[in-house]
Length: 157
Picture 1 (cartoon, rainbow, N blue to C red):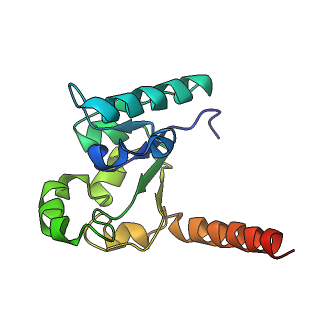
Picture 2: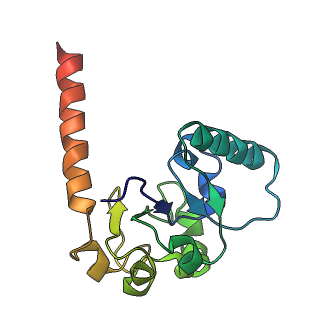
């Protein structure tokens, strides 16, 4: 096992740049020459947080370049609740960022795939990847279940 893992968040950058806590977990996203106002500040916060932990945040426009050598690929739905009007446009605009067998093949040889669920098969993640041998999605969901049960037990006391 390598001492230092290389995670990659395969996600539309502008949506996530408004959430610095998500960026702190991301290692690579998209190549944007200049980010507007708050997004630029969020990126700088993420870079500072990553530097404190010995990591880094890099932006890359090409998803295959971004995942090269990665140990973990993470994605989420492209249109969340309240974004239904943008769903069709996002599907078209983000198709290159779908985690499929080809993109996973460009990652490290032992790379795993994560998704916080629910997943839209064929949109942000291909079914063969979601249900494939390199998917850790179901372990991720089980871990989240145990964490939520522990939180409930703590609150109920």
